[in-house]
Length: 482
Image 1 (cartoon, rainbow, N blue to C red):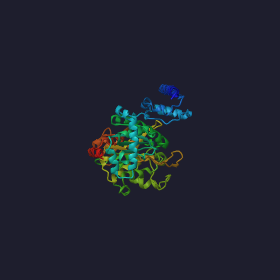
Image 2 (image 1 turned 45 degrees about the horizontal axis):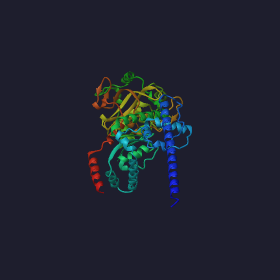
Image 3 (image 1 turned 45 degrees about the vertical axis):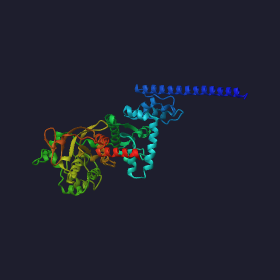
Image 4 (image 1 turned 120 degrees about the vertical axis):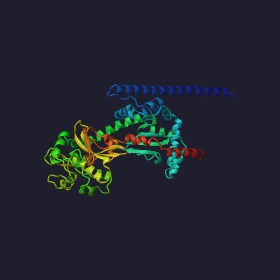
């Protein structure tokens, strides 16, 4: 027992030493964190001021970026970065991620606090495991999981190259895939929001209170995506087929007498009753007819006919151009934009689509090189909105070399979600209706210009139906007793 005071002194000494060591380490960590955050703030200020060579001189550790202040700035719960300074290109990419608008969730303060809560993150992991375990079970298993939790809907933008297999099918209310992005509306337990914020494949998350900001963000990135796609496809060449609307009207009137009940010679170039058109249209869906039109190579009138502008009726286009001398794609109809548009609309009409829901549009379009030219395209009314179908984005013939170039074209739904680059419209028409600045002989819906269905489809998916509300309410009650 004589050694007891010595033992006590040793223990107290060790505790004091440990306390001093811990205090030193903690101070060093806080100092390092403060320095890193200060460095990040300084870098962001430099970038916002227009500096092109701003770099992050020290790589933040994983622990530092779990700090809530940085979470609010980056939209991430953590960034898995190495503790050692990364190469310059990686470091600069990190800076872009910090400052890019796409990294900021569009969440209400309530949801932001929910994401930052550590307990929420633990719940998120547990719920994901529940869904994973229920994948091989029935749909009711997923519904029971939804019924056990407070459920809400969120709009999410993913990198299109990322797999989303971990998201249960029952949670997906809308899924729109484009070249670079996957836009989804997810119905899920609120704690799962944390797992999305942490997901490196997620560019943007928005809740109900931030729908308008989300749509503005989506419009911007889809515009950038469209510009890149159309530039890669070299679409400018097929946009300059028409020169002047009044001159076009005058020249066509010389060749055609306006039939009774029609207000423009343009209408006589949409002929759904032609036998060649009827035979090609019977039993075909709009998408099948669009893909057919997409297979026709575009070739300018000066190159093909040695004329400035030549219009053909759809039947003549289908029957005569495949065998014409100078056709670089023998046995295939070839011409420029007006034949593509008039014939596609004639096919759609012959397939049974009412005249009020399909039309040809002619006007000026603007492409990514800044050029503007006269063009013709088809428009189909889908869910109350006019959507562009442009058949000239497939194969094309180079004017100078007269060589045929293959081109994949754009999907049937491409202009359903991307804005068509129209500058102004001269006229809308088909075999029954006509509309321009002088004549409005068309249904009232023809007064609407073409648009996209992106906002409508995403917005509708954010609002649950009455039946869905009732089902989830009942499941929630059952879940409390499960």
